[in-house]
Length: 194
Image 1 (cartoon, one colour):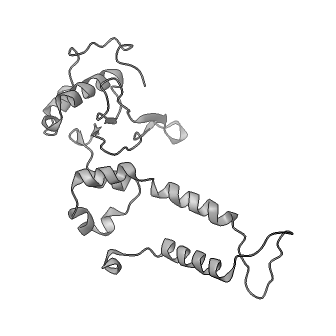
Image 2: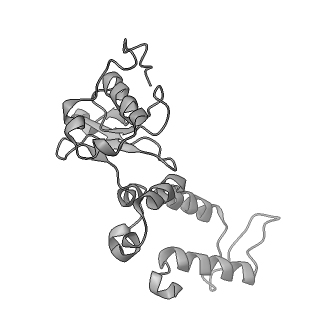
């Protein structure tokens, strides 16, 4: 990320865009967050997302990449952190802060399947949970890689030929793996937790 000094900006001189200042969400920001937003807009004016919770000189912004097939560009949100204050500047909406439920959705959590869960928690808690979470699809990819590395038994009628020195899972280990896979593909619902 470029430094505001390298961009020729001075503290207290640069102001936020009129669009940001007109937002109803702008008043919710602290003075330091407003200054961080102003500097970030001066350094990276085209960024769609900015984490203004850190220092004034360090505001992670969305990464701009060429779109598929050279069509336009794609922006990727910065790394989510606990306690983040992510300011969004979407063209189709008022500039605003990212809600906790939106942060969870961006991490891959299916929040729309059970809206009662998101209604019972504060946005700040959901924001912190998203910041402490790992993207669901990354976890899925890691789990798939681990499971493909395990030597699985084939159907009982076709014996598995293992390299010398390798053993199949014990019956207890196989049952534990089967139970874990069943939970992975058929997750526990909130009604089963009560």
